Length: 190
Image (cartoon, rainbow, N blue to C red; front, side):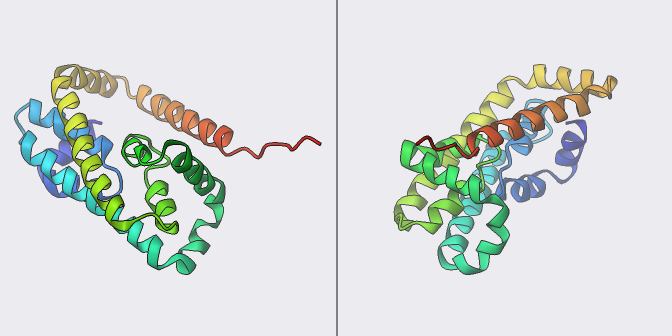
C-alpha cells in the first residue's frame, strides 16, 4: 500500500486513470487517502476514476460484442466464470452492473458476458456510467473519511513486512475458494 501511495503522489492521476480502466479499487482508495493527506485533489481523483472505469467496462462490452470469435480462445480457461457471470446476470438483472464494480474476480467478466448477449448496448452504457459514478464517489469518499485509519494501517504494515504477504495470500485464497465453490460443477442425481 505504501508503494501505491508513493507512486500515486508522484504520477497520481495518470496511474489512477490506467489502473481504473480495469478496476481501480486499490488505486482509488490510495487516491482517497492521498487526498486526505493533501497530496491529491479528491474531486479530480473521483472524476479520473469515473471516466476510466466507465470507459474500461464499455470497451470490454464492445470488444466482446463485436469480436466474440477472436475472444473465445482467451476465455477458454474461464468458461465456468463466464457461466457464473451469466447466472448472476439472470439472477440479479441490471443490478449486477453496479455490483460487479465492487467485486474482484467478476469485474472484467461481467461486461464481457453481457457483451456476448443481446443486451441493449444503450442500456448497458447508461447503467455503466451511473454505476461508475456511484462506485467512484462511494470508494473515494469512504477512503477519504477513513484516511487517518488507513494511513496508520499502512504504516503498521510497513513496519511489519511479514503482514503484507500474509494478508495478500489470505485475500487471494478466499477469492480463489469463492470462485471454486461458485463455479463448481454440480453432480446430477437420477
